[in-house]
Length: 179
Image (cartoon, rainbow, N blue to C red; front, side):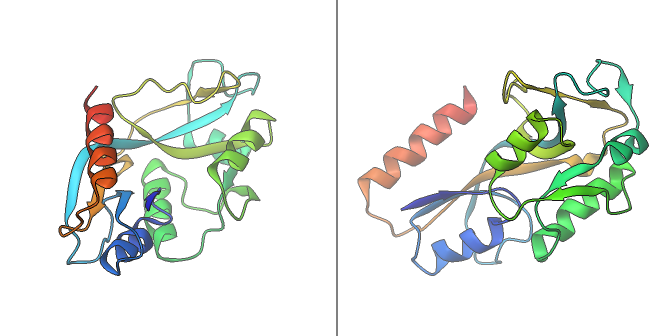
C-alpha cells in the first residue's frame, strides 16, 4: 500500500511506513521521524491559485495584503503540520488568520472552492512542473517569494520491503519526477 501526502500528513504517513502500515509514501520533508529514510525526488513550492475570473488573477504582481483580503481557502489550521504552513504564510507576509473557508479534508474540494471564486488557495506544487492545476485556476504572482516556500518532496519506504509492485511504483515516481 502507498500514500501521497502534502505537509498536512507527511509526518503521519512516514510514521505509518516505519510502523509497517504502508510500504511507500510520497511526502514533504518537514519534521519527519528521525529514523525515516527519505529519498528526495524534487522540490515543491507554495503557490497561490485563484479562479481565472478572480480580481487578483490579472497577471500583475499582487501583495500578501491583497491575498489576505481576498481570503484563503485552507484546511483547519490545527496539528503539527499547520505550524509549517503558517510559517510559510507568515514569511509571505500573511501573519494573521486569513481563512475564509476551512475544509476538513481533500485538496480537490479546496481547488473546487477556489475555482468557484470562494477565495484563494495556497498549495504545494512541484517546482519543475508548469502550474496547470485546472483550466479554471491560475497562479498568482506574489513577490518576493521566501526561501521557506520551497521544500523537498520525495519517498519514504521500508528498506526491507521485498514487494516488486512497490519497487516498480517507486521507480515510476522517480522517472516521473525527473522528467
